[in-house]
Image (cartoon, rainbow, N blue to C red; front, side, top):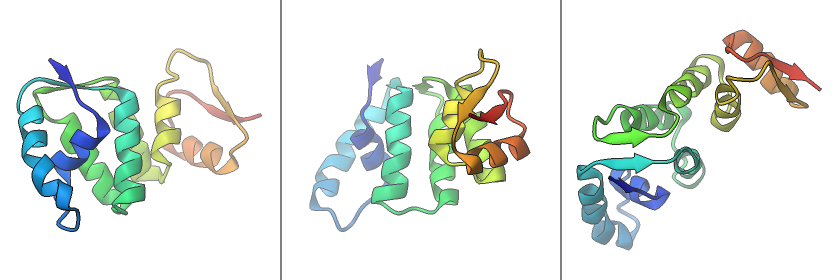
Length: 135
């Protein structure tokens, strides 16, 4: 099994006709994703940022791509269950992916403390397993 970087995921999932490197790199990305692949949680988090920030995909499209990644049978996604929990919170309660992932990965804790009022409000509505409280 090989680990893949964010840029490999980007080339695999996004066919960018405006980038001349994409045409050269996409076949290699497809090849890299054809076998067993490991995607670390940090790479998944950065990939979400690239999709949202660089490619300016909508939230719905970002969620769709990340769910597709999580559903690939040949991909071992670190923290897959927590990532899917975070995606559900993003979709149903408009939480930021990174925030939702931070909370979802805090499952062994009694709470998640923040100064972010919007996060606390949205997380309460999402009824996440770890309660989010204001500091």
